[in-house]
Amino acid sequence: MASRSVDMTAQPQGVEIASGGSVEDFVALMKPRVMSLVVFTALVGLVAAPGSMHPVMAATALLCIAVGAGASGALNMWFDADIDARMARTAARPIPRGRIAPDDALAFGVVLAFFSVLTLGLLVNWVAGALLGLTIAFYIFVYTMWLKRRTPQNIVIGGAAGAFPPMVGWASATGAVSLESAILFLIIFMWTPPHFWALALYRCRDYERVGVPMLPVVAGPDETRRQILIYALLLAPIAVLPVFVGLGGWLYGVASVTLGGAFVALSWQVYRTREGRAGDAAAKRLFSFSILYLFAIFAALLLEKLVGIDGTVVGRMLA
Amino acid sequence: MSEKESEKRRRMRSIAIAWALVGLAALFFVVTLVRLGANVGNRAL
Image 1 (cartoon, rainbow over the protein chains, first blue to last red):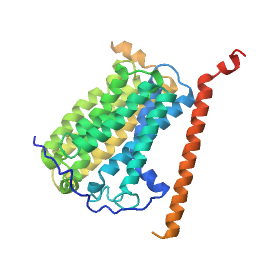
Image 2: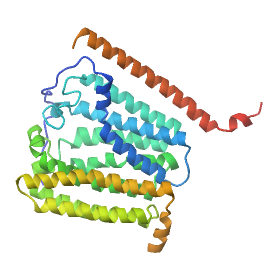
Image 3: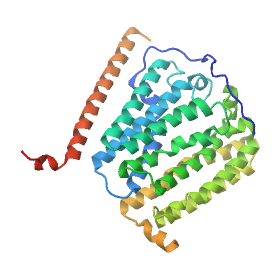
Image 4: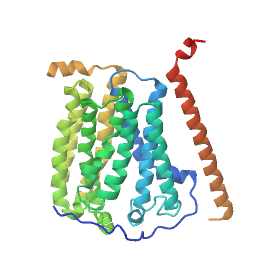
C-alpha cells in the first residue's frame, strides 16, 4: 500500500484572517458533536468502573474530559485550516469562514488543553489527568500533525485518540487502567476505521483535492471496501468481549451481538455495491449506522449499570 | 465587520471568559468541600 506526503510548508489557501469571533464561533471550534460522543463514552467508562464516585467528582471529571475534547477540536481546526477551507464538509468551520483568526484558535486550544488536564489531575486524580493529556497530545501531534497528511493508516493509528475517553472515565473513577477499560478502548479503536472509511468512500474527491491520503484516495475504493469488511468482522466479536470479563450483562450481550451482526451486514452491502449512487448510498448508510452502533452498545452498558443488571452472572455462566 | 459588531463580540467574549473563571473558582471550592467532607466538622480545634 503506497503512502504519500503532503507539503507541510505550503501557505494556507482560502483562509481569511479574522479579527475576532463570537462566543458561538468558539463553541463551534470545539466540535460540539464530536465532544458529545466523547463525553458519552467517557461517562460509560466512569459508570461501568467498579466502586462509587461522588456525583460532584464525576461531573468534574466529565467537564474536564469535555473541555479536553474541545481543546483537541480547536487545535485540530487551527492546524487543518488550509485543507478545511477546500473541503465541502469543513469549509463552513470558523477559521476558513474568517470568523476566528488562526492565532486565536491556537491560543484558545492551548489554554483549554492546559486547564482541562491540570484541573482533572488536581481535582480527580493524576492517572486520569495524564491519560487526558496523552489523548490530546496523541490527537494533535500524532494524528493531526504527523499521520493525517502522510499515510492512509492515519485514522487506524490516530483512532486511538478517540478510543481513550472511556479509559479516562474509568481512570477518573478508579485511579487506574484495567483490562475492562482496555476492552472499551479496543472497541472504539476497531470501530474507527470502518466509520471513517465509509465517510471517505463518498467524500473521496474532497480528500483527493486537498491531498489527504485517505485509503480510497491511495488504495482505491475496492480495497477500502475490503478493509471495511475486515474491520467489521473483527469489531463484531471484540464488541462482545465485555460479556466475558463481567463488564457487560445479558442486555449488553444481546445488543452487541445483534448490532454487530447489522454492522457486518451493512459492511457486506458496501463491499458488494460498488457502482454509482447505490455505492455511495451503501457507504452513507454504514456511516450513519456506525454512529448509532457505538452509541447503542455503550448505552446498553450504561443502562445495565444504572438499573443494576449484574454482568458477572453471564460472565460466570460462560466461563 | 462593523466597529459596533466587533465591539459587541469582544464584550461577549470578555463576559464568557469572566464566567469561565468564576466557574473554575467555584468548581475548585465545591470539590474542596466534597473532598474534605465530614472531616471539616471533625477537625481538632
